[in-house]
Picture 1 (cartoon, one colour):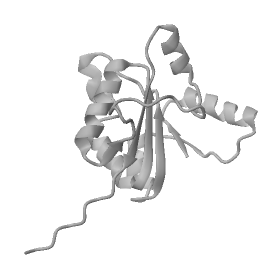
Picture 2 (cartoon, one colour):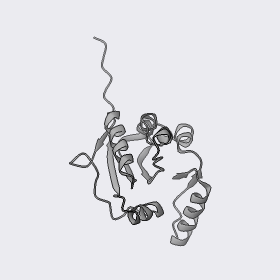
Picture 3 (tube, rainbow, N blue to C red):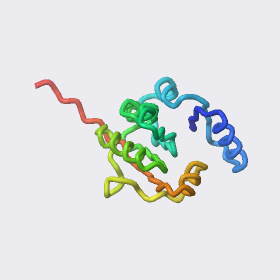
Picture 4 (tube, rainbow, N blue to C red):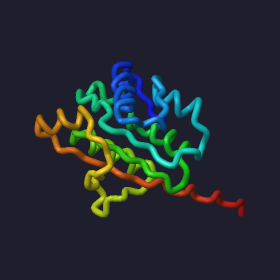
Length: 157
């Protein structure tokens, strides 16, 4: 399931899927928060991939970044225990923000032994934004986390 709010991006994705003969992808043109809240049952996702979301680099726009504590809580609620969350960005300050938010959630474990980014997997598609960022000299960060199991509720003593 692919979710994209930007109509031209949906069109490019559909064209790419057709050119590659890929037919097992469903595309939703909607806001990801709305899709997760209204259409995705709790604990149903085995993985989530968010590649090169808008970094909203200006300080006054940081509130528009998709990776915020409330969104991470929503993701965690929709992901099963052990599911993988894979993020990629070419904006170093956004990568730092993502790490901070995910480490602060307590619901995900970073799969990087060093606690930062992981090497880019060969299977991850290269995006237009990734290529542009590399041309501009931006380092690309792949952040890979595993959804932790919920702590068992404590009994009343």
